[in-house]
Image (cartoon, rainbow over all chains, first blue to last red; front, top):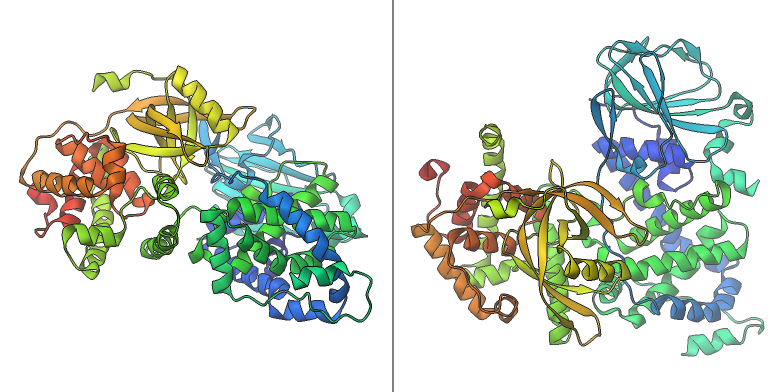
Length: 228
Length: 212
Length: 200
């Protein structure tokens, strides 16, 4: 059973579309595998929609700058509507064909959330293989990490933060053992040495120490970075 | 029309918010979306647009600090509503939630374009709009939704109806089946339900046989 | 049928649709997106195309219906209308999208049900289906009066038509699913429910 879940604040930021792509994808994968977090996320989304678009939001509009923007917009709206409805096509239902990778003779189906991402070359170091997912997020590096049976990650202290999401197989560390779907977020204070007896595939996100000092929020939150 | 002429007099002072959109309930909003899906109903779209536009702009303004981008979020969100209305699933939630998630996805992709310079439109993969698995027991709810759409379909001209039905509704309805077999609808429903649960049971049983 | 097994490794354009089709099944499509118009062009010159049930609910590799175009015309709205018939089922692999966002995949033809003879039950299903075809202008028009009074054909058409979610229908793409199809139909269409043991 999945025992490690994203915190509620992360789920909220995820539902609001406020997280960087690397983290959004990680939570999407977890949510897809975890009915509990699926429920939670659906409820959070409904709540956010109500807050943003519901009755209360409407009265807020009118009390603040709503009057001006409403009137100014009316004329623009008609142009915009004309442009939109001129498009005769309807969008097809997106098709999802699973993307598979093979590593050391083992086949893995990648979760939908990362199926269309550009995947770098796998580099091998002993029983450990790693390939970058090219998200272009600067100091945030996202990878697929594969351990062959008996493999381990050398002891390391995290700089910045690290997220590890187990996609397939198992591993364990000083704090216990993990199953696919387990979502582990560690900050700079932790050390750990994961070992996998049967082999595993993980999705990992690491940030540089340099940027960690700016505070995790700014890193997680692309909106903050854009505005400030 | 009054609303529009009022809005044209932009610079007049002291006009009270007459342009406030009507406060539609979910049932009305749902009707609009279905009318767009089935009839490309421009009037329904206009109503929907005017209802959501100020809301979308207000939320977008908290994320993007220039009005060009805010307008882009609005236009792109509503364009998707127009093109994907047929993918809206009545059983999956309210129209408001659906539009909100579209806006969220559009904003996400736009932020990524601005920041990572990537036009990979990841949001579709991260938050798939057309969701796959239908849980057990939802088969009938799913069918109810179709039934609802079928009643709307009856209003379409005959030849257009054929096409839409041919494309999306290859199935008989439960009513058609009941009429065909000359049985009460309730009997048909319980037979379908029973047959499906037996099928599932049997699938559990014969998986081994199938592989041998 | 050996004939159906030809074409292994062939590449076909793929049209994802929420339409469940078994061999010999027909459907009418409305085509307007440029990439699918391109698909029709290629399909009519070459080897047809594949309709992939979308979303795909199966637990295995996606299975699609390999179709040939049997008729076409223009609708009143100016869009291209296409009648297609399923030639057989194919497993899809190595799918990709071309520069026009049209999907392609390699196909491996699959066997469907072996041939069967009519029995008492399938005759009943056949009569019920014929009655429905006669009432439905759409269906008899699509099949242009061709009603094949053969158990596989009758069962397959029933499965396509029954108001059951596609996620349940995918099971009947399997070659070994004839008996369970019979069972399911007997529970829905007839007074006397069969048991699996009756079939043995």
